[in-house]
Image (cartoon, rainbow, N blue to C red; front, side, top):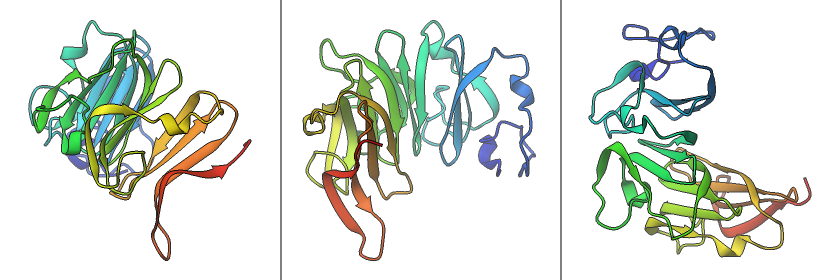
Length: 238
């Protein structure tokens, strides 16, 4: 792929890598279990819960405390001592879930996408806590273009950030700086076990339920560019 600002982790001076190649900076690092890539930055999670990031950091999305790019993967020092169990790279931001159900985020807080509550800074260069309701713990996260989905320990879905196309249950155009639960999606289909958000500025969301049902809503790009406020039932019993 294209090593823009070091997103592939192969070092400065490498522009393109036409076929898969070992990232030398990670050769001696513990086993990588999860990777998440956005347009210009990459997050990597080890089996021990440590996190590395590389690529562009013009918004602080790498979590290293500044706005400098990283051409090779570097460990996020502020997460040392926290066992991270999930992560996702969004457009100019990153979100992490820790053992015990906590969530942290960094990068561009466009429309409240970091979920850090009212009054949060526009840019966050070190992972900071996502605001959660008392007793709520998160198990996974999906970051998109300008909205974030979090799944809690009961399988319920929460969202923060912009809702330009009505992909979620906020009013179209709403901005949520604190995660909001999506109660209408709990329609007897069990827990949410998988989720995806499209990027590129045309936000749409897909949720997979425990019974195999898939629901989707948001911007349906096509000849007439339909908007489907939540939820549009796509597939049942997959």
